[in-house]
Amino acid sequence: MLKPSPYGWISQYFLGFFFAYGVYLPFWSLWFKDQGVSSTDIGLLVGLGLATRCVANIVITPRVHKVEHLMPALRWLSFAALLFVGFHFFTGGSFWLMALATVLFNLCCGPIIPLSDAMANYYARLKMLDYGRTRLWGSIAFIAGSTAVGYLVAEFGSDMILYTAMFGVFISLLFAMRPTNPMPVTHGGQSAERPKLTALLTDKPILKFLVLVSLIQGSHAAYYGFSAIHWKAAGHSEDVIGYLWSLGVAAEVAVFALSKRLFVGWSIRALFIAAAVGVMMRWGITASTTSIIALVVVQLLHGVTFATAHIAAIQYIQNSEENKIVALQALYNAIPLGAFIALMTVLSGWGYEHWGPLVFWGMAAMGLLALFIKLDSQDPHQVVDVSDKPLETQN
Image 1 (cartoon, helix red, strand yellow):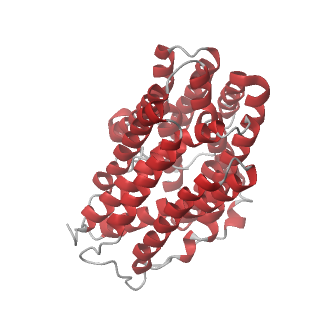
Image 2 (cartoon, rainbow, N blue to C red):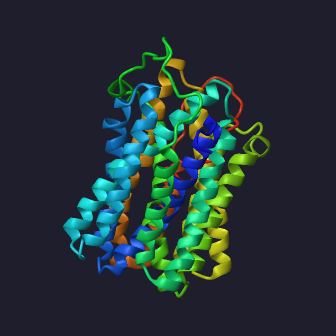
Image 3 (tube, rainbow, N blue to C red):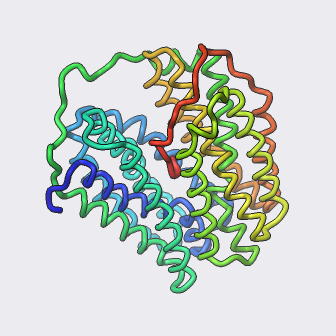
């Protein structure tokens, strides 16, 4: 217990952090709303958080290049994140203080996901843990966090969003303070040369890939920022909203877990077409109705709109030239899952302010545009089994 195995250390860290992340992602906009922030400003704050995580992963994360630095970095980042969640209590309704708290918190939580994943991958390469079995605890914790905070907010008010997030971060910090056995140590020859990102951004096939994935993943912006507000305005309680978000994550995890069986023989284009059609269906339903049965269908489609698109993106990256894989993964996380979603969140805030739920039709239109983008062919391949990499939620 005081000196756990690598599997125990990392899975328990995932439990604490993703519990907090399951509070943050669906419910932070509701906390802003209860502080009197307008929908447009909520869009700016949520988009600012996404942009900050994107910048942090480009600027801060690569500086931790030795595995023995991962554990100290996670400890310091968790400690700082705990302080900055608490700082939200002292913003006093000021937009600029909320913006400062948002930047500071996301500077910490942004690098935590790739750094903790890097630590899990280090031990997985040493055959000391199974990545999927370890990472799955993060998805379970995300579901638990979003479910618990929905109930607590319904019973005790919106401040429980901050208290519950602080609890999760504190648990992750508590678990992170213990050493593991054996400790991570850098071995020689682990670094690999990769092409410059600027060179990849001028490569037409890669640009088409990034645009396609940005359209599909960016269509989730209004969902991340305003679904909770929209559903609450329609009369659904916070605990029901928490259950709906949990259902979405459960659908995502199920698709990842069954991907090898579900998508055997599927091409990358077929996967992207399925995701794009799912985008049009999901956001069209969201714009049209708020009945609970329809919302259950909407959340089950998260396994199509997010997970299937992610599987296709991972397949495309792994089918690329070997020396481009790491750089493409960085671009995938920085642009479609980072900067573009941040931009679309800001725009959806303005749209929701003026048009309400009709903004989701704009998200559905992005799926239609995605259907017209055809990626350049790659070598024959099989769909990658990413059942060992369920994501909550990334961004």
